[in-house]
Length: 343
Image (cartoon, rainbow, N blue to C red; front, side):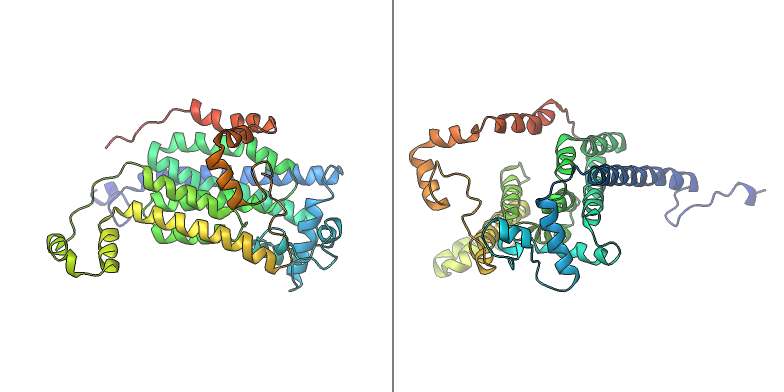
């Protein structure tokens, strides 16, 4: 009789029923991701079949990824001819996005723009996983499913799908993964996601800098005193400036050190990609400069903003559709309510 009432379970002693219950969110999450991927891809493919896809960006990336699949440089003839760079122009001189090469092997299965559209739908859907894990850890499973569904049905995702294909399809997944892994304490994995994010587009370093700024300003616990700290202060006059700086950095909270690192790496990567690498691949560094009212380039625009700050404020609402876009992005966040997890 004793054997009849034994409940089998995992090695840590949890009963089998609890293990089955813990698997239910995973199954529901997988179903949500699969449903979002199928809907995203189906919508994009139906637009392509109905001849509603564009003949510009989709063709540019199709030609570039096809070149990758043949182990050639990512040449997009339509981009080079249309913008006066020549028929052998590589899109790395337009936007530095070498991460597109990961889609190239799938062109061996289907050589056509539909592959890009399906890949984009899957990439956008995969971002649900880190969003769910982050929210579940903070607010619980129910809130995680609500947040994940809200993302899958959000206006930015819908607009991305309606724009055919763009390299920013990688950004939701990688940025969410970076934040979620950092929040989980996996700082190395977060750094890897951040590095890969830099390969998606030349301005992704600014996103890293923004994340680093958040880490710098958020409230943190005071760090524990460093062993030998008193002796370090007593002997400060005899140590070199470099050693003193290293000691000061070591006493900073871990999040502040990480935040400073993200800001530094992000800004340096943006400058290197936009000012050096794009030109190295035959592009024009100032081709996408859209703030001519502030100055012909970034340094002179920065001086203009410092001397005429009101012009920078006016540029935020010019053209007026910017305000509508900001409202669609910000208002859902302002209307949402959050709570701290009970300890």
